[in-house]
Length: 84
Image 1 (cartoon, rainbow, N blue to C red):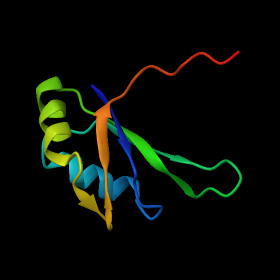
Image 2 (image 1 turned 135 degrees about the horizontal axis):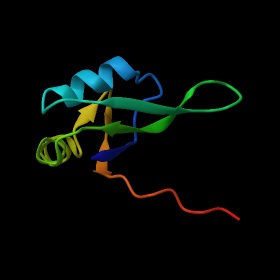
Image 3 (image 1 turned 180 degrees about the vertical axis):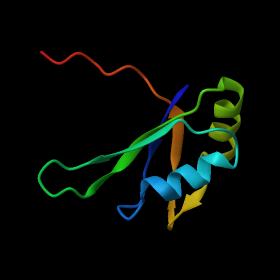
């Protein structure tokens, strides 16, 4: 199951997000979206967890949790919209 994680601190990195979500189950991948020009984090990313039950537990437990001074948003990721 792929989760959207928003309102991340610009200092957030893959290891810290992996550690945060691993407390609730196995994490397959973490992808923090970065700005193409600066390479700086854009404040959101995606976490993939193979077990849906664990992913839902992580989503419920971590939504609105303060991480690096910011309350994060955690939702099930939606498919990327087609751009024309």
